[in-house]
Length: 506
Ligand SMILES: *[C@@H]1O[C@H](CO)[C@@H](O)[C@H](O)[C@H]1NC(C)=O
Ligand SMILES: *[C@@H]1O[C@H](CO)[C@@H](O)[C@H](O)[C@H]1NC(C)=O
Ligand SMILES: *[C@@H]1O[C@H](CO)[C@@H](O)[C@H](O)[C@H]1NC(C)=O
Ligand SMILES: *[C@@H]1O[C@H](CO)[C@@H](O)[C@H](O)[C@H]1NC(C)=O
Ligand SMILES: *[C@@H]1O[C@H](CO)[C@@H](O)[C@H](O)[C@H]1NC(C)=O
Ligand SMILES: *[C@@H]1O[C@H](CO)[C@@H](O)[C@H](O)[C@H]1NC(C)=O
Ligand SMILES: *[C@@H]1O[C@H](CO)[C@@H](O)[C@H](O)[C@H]1NC(C)=O
Ligand SMILES: *[C@@H]1O[C@H](CO)[C@@H](O)[C@H](O)[C@H]1NC(C)=O
Image (tube, protein in one colour):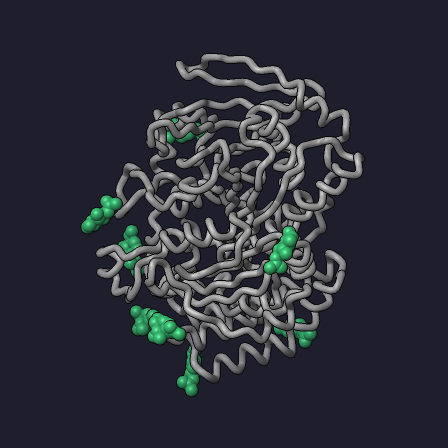
């Protein structure tokens, strides 16, 4: 897996606000209901084409490729959604292994920004995983489609298997694109519509999730209700964020504190800790605050670059002078081997690509997509606290959880964010003590809930929480693991949240 931290910190040279495109009009959406279905065979593979004439949007996908999900009777669809023919967004849908007709539907989106959601599918919570670094996948008993219908989407276009065949003028319009896709998806697959919808994401998803996605998905429903937009209500009931980055200033301070006082081992000493905090406070804070409080793009660009030069770079040099640290899991030094990215080779196999209907070579976190965020893209120096507060206040069951071996979007910062949210439960949440979170009696972390907000620290897990488990070869790397409940824990967290319930130990 690529080091997203580095690009996250270093790539942010430019900032700009992205305006969310208006949702499709009533006429456009009504046309979704008049879709036209046809079948085609290409390269010996049968494909379903589903067209919406009025929007010129199209789904072009393979049914039941037999790849990854091999549980008998569990349907899967993989392929593309396109609007206007040039932007082709890759999706991979797996029916729930249990009661798919009634199971809720959840979308998984990885962060980056600009990373493929195949990371989540194959390294974290999908139906198959590459255990022990194997070159072929095997079934994951903790797959999230044990409980829900799962949809993995590569966004923005340009990431993973998604591609823009007219990439001359790229734009980051993912949330509206994905919302439109959901409308088409429900038209093609009416058997999955009208049910609870969950959005689960990770890392930079702390921006995507509460930001453009929840705002558009959740708050479009009132426009639908008011009759100004015609479409399927998408009933966002759950938002889950795994090791999220939400707010730059909180993040910076949390990284400095984490490096000094995490539960594994200190990576900086007391004097470095103090001097980094000092420079953050005296030099980087004012510009970051200016940016966060409605600053201009130019002010945000300055705040960002200034913070990188004066805080991030010295922090990196002090904590990781030899550039060997895995910032996503401080228990590892070296070549960032856990989770292994074996799946990439698998997805590069022409036979597999053909079977699933992939049209281009896979790239996990392509630089052009990331640069898009840096140059025209998401405002990383801006805060997502108001958006997350609004989502929580509106009654969406929200869980923020974090593996405690990750520096990048670490649990120190996640807790500060959770305690700072502005909603009716703020006071109670802030003063509440954490308790043990157990899975079948095994302690996997500590958590607290108030009403519809849950926060959880996961012990012995890096950035990609659902991956982690006790493997002998992790121990060989001298990783100290006292519990091994993470894949089960992540599934339990997912289930409870999708059930619109606060976390509870079992
Ligand atoms: C991974 O390897 C260990 C032993 O090396 C074995 O016990 C375990 O079953 C393997 N897991 C899978 C899913 O193959
Ligand atoms: C931060 O330090 C840089 C020099 O490294 C300086 O140019 C900048 O003006 C300082 N900013 C503040 C707010 O002190
Ligand atoms: C703290 O660490 C820095 C290097 O990161 C080193 O230069 C400094 O001497 C250390 N200070 C103490 C008191 O050990
Ligand atoms: C960095 O490498 C040098 C030389 O190999 C070694 O002496 C030192 O301990 C390393 N430092 C860290 C923090 O790994
Ligand atoms: C990283 O991998 C390279 C070759 O793949 C190897 O030579 C090197 O020793 C590895 N580094 C560490 C710190 O494990
Ligand atoms: C995709 O990868 C294959 C090798 O695996 C290569 O032959 C082919 O040229 C690549 N296609 C593109 C468009 O880069
Ligand atoms: C959670 O939000 C829902 C609204 O979606 C509300 O009905 C419910 O009372 C909330 N639960 C709690 C415990 O506040
Ligand atoms: C929480 O779990 C820890 C072990 O991780 C245990 O030592 C402690 O007693 C537990 N606390 C409670 C209140 O059960």
